[in-house]
Image (cartoon, rainbow, N blue to C red):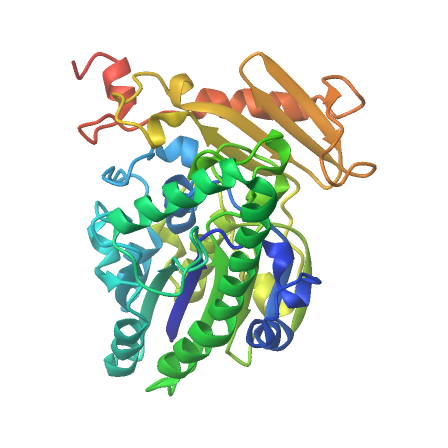
Length: 405
């Protein structure tokens, strides 16, 4: 089977037309109506590097330890790329820039930049293998929400200028940013995805599967009480639902369940799901955190997951500071979400939200406000499982044990 997984950067679940959002997204709405759409899906980190690592391995970011572009994924955590290859599929990926995302993941077989839409589509049209897994990380929905390719340098310059203007004149600039974001989402739905669908359908005599999701959501500094100063104020610095809730839909094969799927799902579930569909679920780590959603895709069975975990990182992510020697220096925030409760833990701060009465997470409650105590126990257990990759790409646990200086 020919499979394309599209991960749109910064795409919130609640902005799409079929979700009642402000964006006009007829093609995505059609995909949602003709395929399987999950209603409550959450990423495991609010920015790209850790969230994408989790998405392709089925392992939570704080266990992978990856927090910079150049960090490898350790061999004990095989990726969905390896699973697909062992199942006999050709593997390829397109990323916002080949020197960054998946640059230390050779099995991803990065073919080029996803900003070159023509190259992505030409690859899919010219690849005649009946079994193909292609992962496309789409960048057009990321700040500055423009409709033209950008070098990383130009992207940084434009983002800095936009954010500076927003700080100077927020009442004018921030609404314009929201408008640009809306148009970027609409371009993704109406220009990029139809071209991709036409391309993947070529030579797909055995059918094709398209999956659309996101690495994280987006904000515009609403909770900070001030305009955003860096890109990480838009996503990366907070673990609220607007940063974590993302779309997930599957479209194409006749065997897919047609309709919505309730229950809690996670992007960390995607790798086990695809591995099962490919018949290679045993390739992934046996102690992975994600579970397969294949039965949900086929029969509409709600996932059995009862809790969503997400983690946040300190600014080692975006600054040239030396890598942290302790995981506690890196993974500085955790969130645990059930249907009713949202637990937030940060250094010297722990509180909960009762989502039943406060779905917008506006009224933090002190620990011990009626929430199950097991949630705090789970967070403590997850904190104990955290580690980080060293700057030389080795496992920090080996350093902690004295095997590495």
